[in-house]
Length: 130
Image (cartoon, rainbow, N blue to C red):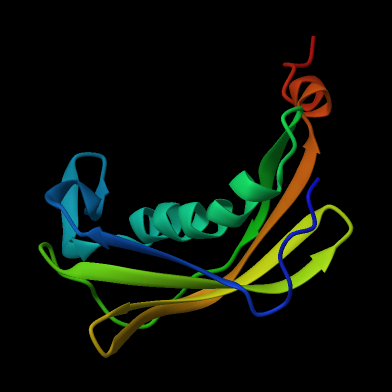
């Protein structure tokens, strides 16, 4: 694992909300705005941008934690800006804090956690129990 980041370093990601991101359960649209689960996917991606640079060739990141404090809606066609900041690095675990916004409107805040392991260890973790 490469220790190339320090507390406070940032990564950014932007994404336009599309119709496939709205809050839909079992084929029924509940709200015509960006769903918390779609937002979570993009939040995880933003913090994963650190992990992609930190991993050695024989390593991979795995999510350990995600909190989403959803504050405001993001509408289809709006661009969500996500800024993730290194909050802590504890051994092989990266904790990021983030903010997601549309223009000046805060959409969500929270934290993500990812651990970096050898790919071999992850393969063993993901073996289906017999």
